Image (cartoon, rainbow, N blue to C red):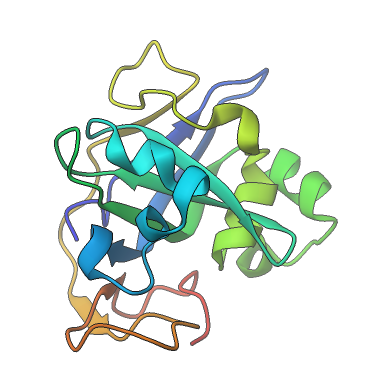
Length: 171
């Protein structure tokens, strides 16, 4: 929830930026949907907080951030961002002109930002990293709901998004 409104930054020829507008939380071994339960694929989740955890689902790379101390696997999936800078690059990568379609879902976001497995495990809490997060706007209402596409879910809402933001993915 604290990531909402923060700005995701990726350094390349042109700096890409997007305001984080939708996330989902995953809680380690007690969470039936957590990648921490998936063996080798979830190894990064066991590392310290502030690392990129990237894995593929249905042909799309998904970007997560580890959130707890080493040995306590949990993370937050970035589901959607609002494009702020580098839109022409994002459109070229996604092969779409509709700005709303650029980053309104976890696979769309990673494709638009050129994120793949090569970024898995990097620390994202320092501006010297190729990917990092900065503070952003925090004046908005937050909506909570069940996670999307999770069959065996925990009984609490773990999806969070900025109310009324047009870049939030469709449930």
